Image 1 (cartoon, rainbow, N blue to C red):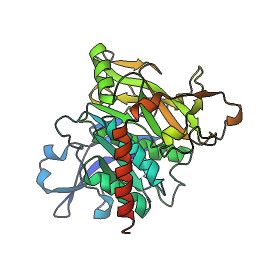
Image 2 (image 1 turned 90 degrees about the horizontal axis):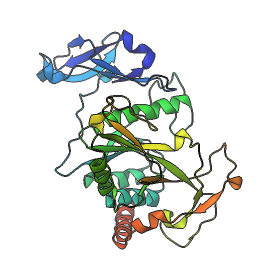
Image 3 (image 1 turned 45 degrees about the horizontal axis):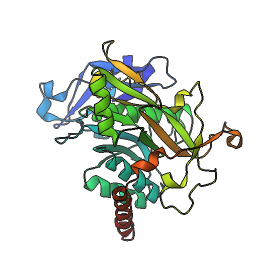
Image 4 (image 1 turned 90 degrees about the vertical axis):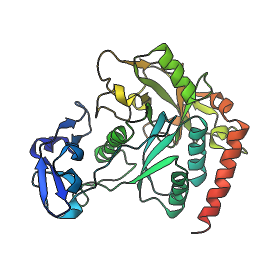
Length: 349
């Protein structure tokens, strides 16, 4: 359960039983990152299975006074189950609004091609067309979808996508939730749908991560950095259908690297519960290592419009073709087939 970090000392875990009665227990743990601009805290309640009334529990919440109304409770949730061979999941965070259908399909198919077993999205006010595409991938088992509802509605101004403390809190809630729901996977990455992980030498993500772990058996996370492909810049190959082949010019990476360019793939079993944020993580203990190996193992291609605080006309440009070797004919065909199928689904709306 998620609350403001300042409120956790005043709440208890409330359990709603099927006869309408309520029981409460003290929370078992609070997870939050100190010295962060975020004010979210994760409350861990005792597992309902361990409680005397476990068979009758139909809802759970946290509050300073347990409510009787069912609308304040949510059903107890379990981690997403893995299938044999599943090792790698991505947290796509909040997906909202009228996302470009073709770009969404390209991103999903690329990650599928590169070895991703599961992608978790939190949906907020997506259009019917976007919903159709997401449901298609949910039906084939690649994507899991959870609805997202804004907290404190009517009290504070919250919005997705905005660069405000409230929006960062919203994003942090789903990042922490991803850590809980995806904890059965061996590796988990936190990444946006305009970002592409690009292995420098390996064929795909799983081969890359297996090679890293064979070299560093006590690895907890791998840190990499994003390089910006500015969409306002002239397209290198405007006639190509795929975004990643249209744009080949990126910014030049220069030290010191902004923390907002940093992303990680982590092992849930080897990092602190509640420590995962979009741009960082804490290892479980000192026996584990966070590999700070930017730009030699992998890089993130970030395709977006210029940052408001940048003067992109003055940014140094570098031509980069590293992702192209991963765009094989079978991937191009898979993207084309998926677009045709999804657009046919959309026509039924």
